[in-house]
Length: 132
Image 1: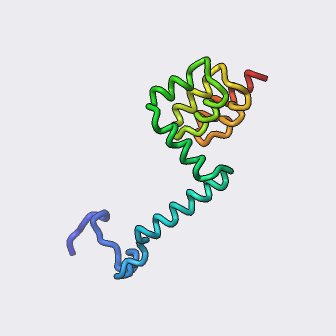
Image 2: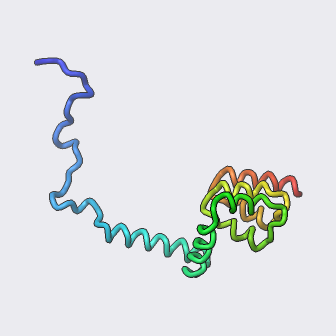
Image 3: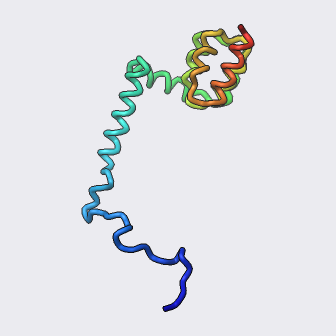
């Protein structure tokens, strides 16, 4: 018997995953779309906004370039309304700039404190501690 390295040895037949010949273990594209739609509906419902409002916000934020949104987040003349729009920006860098802005209110910082991005939430927490 010839020697072969262990990484080249083929695993025994029963250790390999069993696949159905029809491919039942792979979801169809329509099943994937249904699950994505269900998760989107759940996230919209949990946010307490209608689908129209959420899509409107995404379209409004998506039409501006990233540089313009960054400039808005940095400006000292930032309105509360615009700050709350930037809270839902998909880019964490925009929300980070918002957290570093000295002119935003404690309410906005309070919301940023619960941001999914760790850096944004940490900056918001530290800024809140400095305000107290």
